[in-house]
Image (cartoon, rainbow, N blue to C red; front, side, top):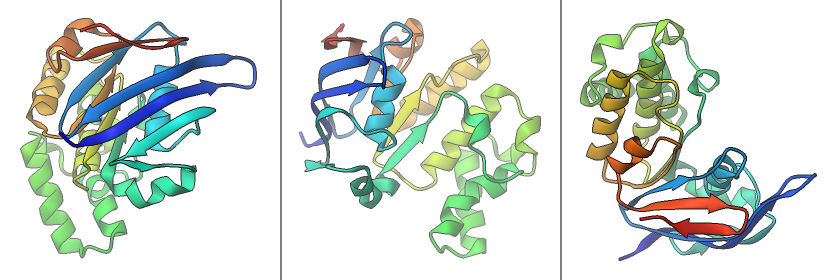
Length: 217
């Protein structure tokens, strides 16, 4: 099976200390994997390295078997990667739900009417069409997470990277996120500290520590 993501002996350090080393991971086409680990183990940093937002110290990052030697080389795969940060509230670009979901399509040159049609279809797929004209900052945390997912999925990425997607959500919002993620046929890396959540998404779980990734299940 073709791999979407390959990490080969990747290491990362800050100005003050080494965070992790020798991380090797293969994620196949449409495979979902989860990464757990202690606070400060570097889970978010590893996800940002895969997203092309941070540069590793050593090792290789490959997308679709092509090595990314510099952060600039991720540019050709930017539309292939959807990255959901822990705090989505700082990443919205427009005030209303529909405008924000349309933004990426409009930036690609798609006409307004077609962008609106596709965006409404996406909101409908995710069960939030009723939020179309709402101000994003009036929404609950769970609703904001789903809107942010809509903004990612509208560009049809091949890889989805999720950093603590259920952080601070109530049970209903968490269940809705699980339903959505289980319905998505994409290569996916999920970083979470929430064991029961990730077990409902994938049986493939790794633990990150300073010496690399250890397969838990």
